[in-house]
Image (cartoon, rainbow, N blue to C red; front, side, top):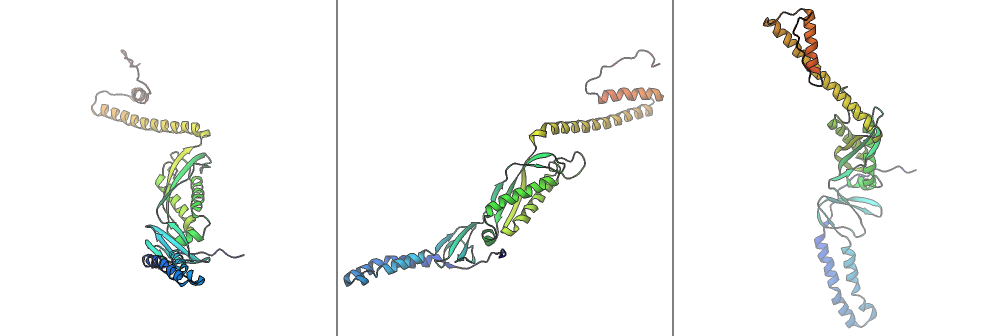
Length: 293
């Protein structure tokens, strides 16, 4: 079994096409003169001699081709790769050369919305946008069957790998997650796609997550979980602030000798202040007209 041969880009210098275009046109235009000469000769073979410059001119002009800016043309002769022309303009090569055009412009590719499981096993929906361009014409044409389809499949494969490597959310654990660390995840995705596309002569300019969500079947439950986590975090902040305010109140009362409180009265005051500061709704004050005891 023959091994797959890796083909690399090989620049080639070809002739400018302007001179050959003028020469070919001259051959075609001189044919009426040759036809008149043949007709005056009167002989059959001589009368067909005017076809020779026409045929020669047409064959020569078949070697003309135009290279656009940010475009390359790979040349092959009977299946043998001869080189790549990247200089824009009108060019001319052997008419028997086959010409394969490849755009070197930057392109966008958006993956479909993929449904995969994250690192925690939760089903999620994820999609990405990949910005890429061809940097090696020969590798893109001859190392893979269809480099555009190759980009599509390999990008989706890398995206699945990245999605299963991170949890959707860190849940306060301080670990890398898809939702909370977009830059790091995008960089990892770009590297993963580049590793797969290197053999095809393609450079990944940028890769970004364009869609990220929980799968519909668990979206409601995960929303409740996120809401509960937010409530717990908010409550923790409120309690932390309330304790600080109570401590400050007791310290200032003691420092200014406003009132002297024993431990039981302090406990009662702390309880009342925490109820006021941590409650969900406004408290109703109760005026104590007598003694605490």
